[in-house]
Image (cartoon, rainbow, N blue to C red; front, side):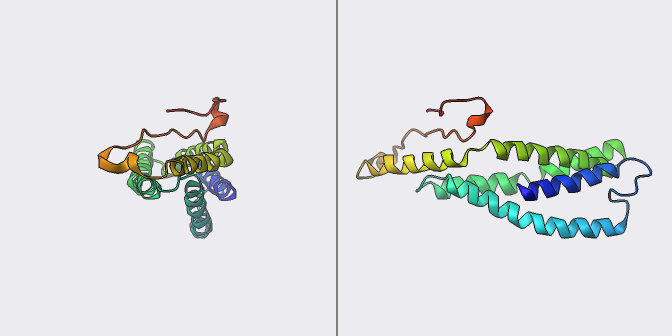
Length: 166
């Protein structure tokens, strides 16, 4: 969460620079170097934490398929941010206004991350592992027949009091 706060702080400084006559906010060359340095410090922990959090909630035996989806959403959506930022810069004529979008995305990420109940996700993944172990064999996966997917509710603080069910 600290790395997200750091990114939020950097974006807020960028927003300040959108106002005419602002003394800071990426109006000086040295600020770009500081931003690059801080970006390097924050990106590694964010990527590491997100993968670790995700891995802790993946049921055993489902790692390959779920990490494939993780990789697609992680790398496959990397075009969206630059597209939106470019559209904002082109529409407004002020590249610093893209920091408003970046700040909104950081705040949204903080809200989303804060709403994840990691303990519940880990426990649910473990319950799925135990349920699979109770069957003694993998007959449900033989012959092209797959089990019905289970929904995992890791967002209980968003208004749902009960775990989701299939």
